[in-house]
Image 1 (spheres, rainbow, N blue to C red):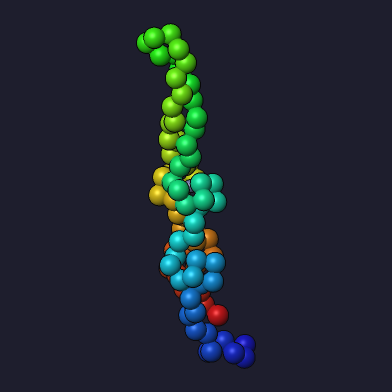
Image 2 (cartoon, rainbow, N blue to C red; image 1 turned 180 degrees about the vertical axis):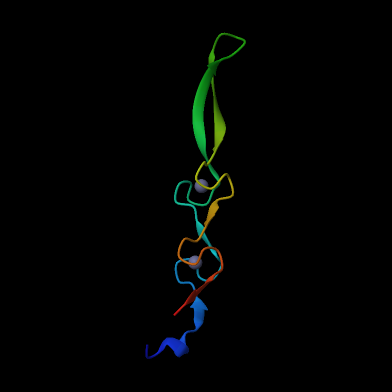
Length: 76
Ligand SMILES: [Zn+2]
Ligand SMILES: [Zn+2]
């Protein structure tokens, strides 16, 4: 097949060669803040924030690029 010998590795575009892309589930934050409320000791509602670890990236905020499988390079 003509051109097969001309294969070369080029930096992966979606991850810009880093091998990882920003997690879409948490926008790279690694989790989301959840606003919650509970009844305080004085009988009044108090509000607090709870951090939920993103399940898509396990809290790392990034996921292995599917195009290059984390190598950062693709073969053209
Ligand atoms: Zn995530
Ligand atoms: Zn990639």
